[in-house]
Image 1: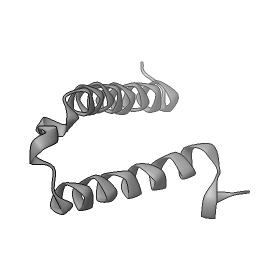
Image 2: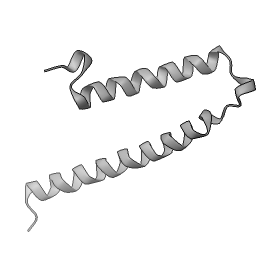
Image 3: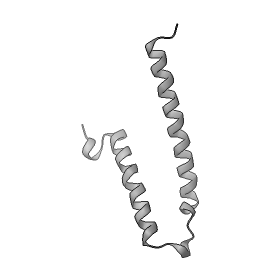
Image 4: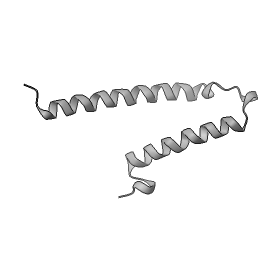
Length: 71
C-alpha cells in the first residue's frame, strides 16, 4: 500500500519533470534568440525579454534564497 510519502515523492518528481521540460524549451528558445533576427530587434523585444528576466529572477531568488527571499 502506498504511503503519503510515496504520493508526495511521485508528485514532486512529476513537478520536477515538468520544470525540466520547460527549462529545456526555454534554453532552446534562447539559443534561437527568441525567434528574433538581430536586424528585427526593437524595444518591444527588449520589454518582452525584461519581463521574462524578471519572472526568472523571482524564481531563482526563491530557489537560492536571494533578493527578497534571503533568510
